[in-house]
Image (tube, rainbow, N blue to C red; front, side, top):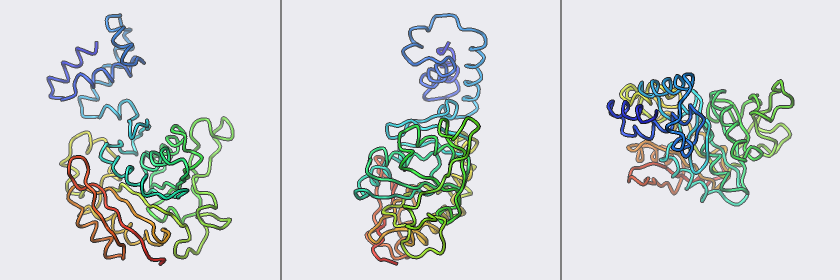
Length: 321
């Protein structure tokens, strides 16, 4: 069956027609690649044929294979997706590489705009001594990140806060439905999606006010924020502009709006000597570095990805204010 769909996708110009057809057929039939090959010539029930056809039609309309399957691999881990999250991309693995090296022993990290949670989860999966807090403006994205943390074995070391950038860290505790198997009972008692008192040093945790310099004491802040300029979004490939959440794409008129917020506020949440690591667009290195420089950050570096493009800006917070 998959070969016919391969040919149909190939005629439409899909460069990965064979792989797409195999993955979607196997997903619809509940077969892995080996079973799909072994049972290729067996008759398929009409109901299953319909499931395969539906998925392939959606692929033809531009929806990505990962969205259709509902998961994507990143840094050797599997992440669930929903309509509020972007797909983790290989380019972002550089951010994780740098963060793993930068995080001190027993360190604490803050990930802003976490989406699927792929960045902090991948970091903590490779740094079992560390812990973190992940924030997002979307409740649906944060719920998926929480489920992904449990799925990848870091749920006990990664907390969650709902809100806009650093406001999420300062806000009262948010409540996110627990991921499957972690509620108090089968009716889905809500679990707290905010950090324990270790983040703020007081019984009130991150909800405590007022907040002075470095109260949270994060060693590292990471973010892969929206950085596409608003006017460019409609020119992107259909699987991006039609299916990715606009909230996670739109960086404002010049694509730099999130970086201005992060550069302006990060110092209040970092320990002296702490670092900020942010993913950037290929043409934003100099602009983002300048934003952090203007806010007093030092030792600012722009790192390139395997394709030779600017991809991550690292900035050090050396003062205690």
